[in-house]
Image (cartoon, rainbow, N blue to C red; front, side, top):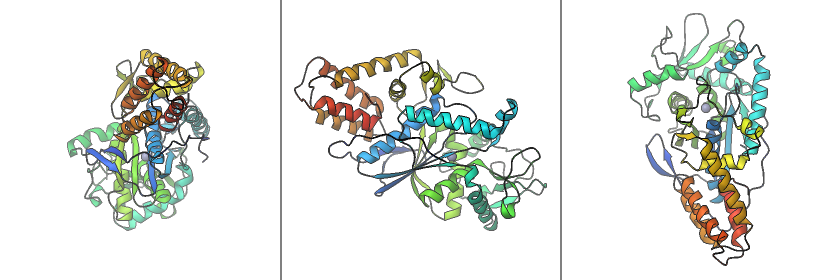
Length: 412
Ligand code: ZN
């Protein structure tokens, strides 16, 4: 699948330092220490609805990771998937009497446009679940042969992962079994499915059903893949056995990332699958979690249609720390629009305070677990002084513009 179009990222003088990131598995801040090629996998959308601000906040988070790594001299190999076949997509298509493929194509196209508008650096590989089915089926067969998976004997052809084959199961989310059992059904799991060895065993392969699309699965028979194995296989195929960052929203902490890691680790014999499991907070609206069931989603495309500058949307989302669940309000957007206007004015000033200090300050804040509010405060202070006529560095306004462009993705 084609990713969206990229854009030129300005080169900054010198080099940024190493990035310390919070790892959900170790529950603490640890330096991300990638080799020359940093490898990142981020879970993409299931394209049954438009990109809302929660998606945007997640994508901006991992865009910052990529920008900070690049600034530190790393080459970044970034892979993102699109779950273009799964239950929610089929359910939405059935509800609206629409062809599921057309729905997926339309929403994926809109997502690409939104990402481009928000100046998200595109992944090197943007991979659909459907195009990965032969690889996924092959890996599920390996897990079956290896005794880490089993087929239900109810004639459905459904194959499940045996979580007892993963002694570390639970290490990524740090949840107790009771917590896992509570969350599992809320996030697509089927603990009560008859014939499973353990309620928490996740689906690897769903046998073909009447009226549902299916694909050949070799010895598995026709069917379609489960979601967790999809991400594990795409990441292993394109990034290798160990990756630096596995990313997504914090609603993917369990079961999605836990199960993906368990699948990948069983397939490769290497652990941990990811050095860092990184999770972005959720975006609520006026104090409530944004969700489809509440019908309170704010779509990026809707804001674009209202002629809101995508750079203001980006700044509004960057004004909170990526790990915190936070709220979207009109005031937040207004403040971001005002900040963007101030920064644009400041970038046009004839001179300002030291550009080198500004750059060092922004680099330091972002290297500290992507402290974007701290980085914005430093840029604000510089802009305020430049607008007041303080400072005599004639190169500073241009460096200011390049710094916020290269490191924060905000083009002035
Ligand atoms: Zn995923």
